[in-house]
Length: 263
Image 1 (cartoon, rainbow, N blue to C red):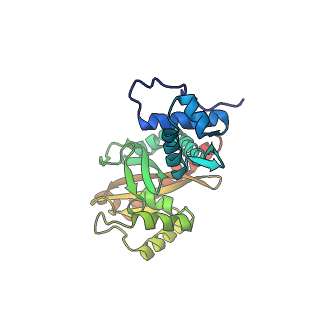
Image 2: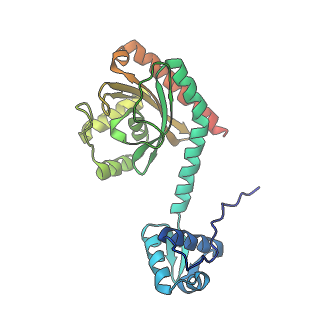
Image 3: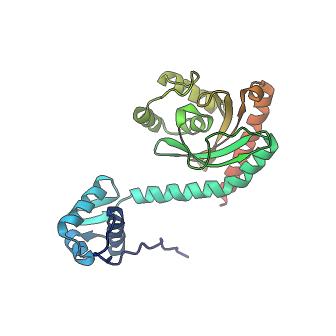
């Protein structure tokens, strides 16, 4: 059974009321989707906008790659496909990983998290706190630089090299603590170690006094995100303890991966 995408109410709005530019733009996009392509004149006639107003919206949407232009017609761009794929993947990973993250936090007594990459930054989807967990700023929606934390390095290590280069070029390697990796060559060496080890280690690189072990979540070759366990250096300074945590993190990542295959 084919599920139709949720429809945006693209009926001509009441023009005597203030309308935000974003609302107009989305109404135009939805009307183009319904018509499978449309031109300036028919959109202006449908909404009652001036042609210049419609043209301004269309130009912006083309520049931002939400629409493409084919002669005098405009069509919905593939960027919406990537956004839809990201939103679906994000929701899937949250739903699949949440119970496993809760179990991981309970078993370790530490803080367990799951994160994804969006536009070159890490975004936390969920955090669960064990009995001995330290609270940090890693709550839902927190954005972090990928080079500066465990989940970030676990994600970076499994991105294509050209994507890594683009992220570094866009954001640089800002220093958060004296332990943050700020040299590009050093970062690539670290990412190679992550691949060999199967886990990423954050040695107080984003928050002083906090260490972290993370592992990627990969489904059929597609990187979904990463999960981690973090705690104070007092406990994470014990190599045997860190090794135990690393094994639990990897085991949890594998469970999430298996569940994701049949989601």
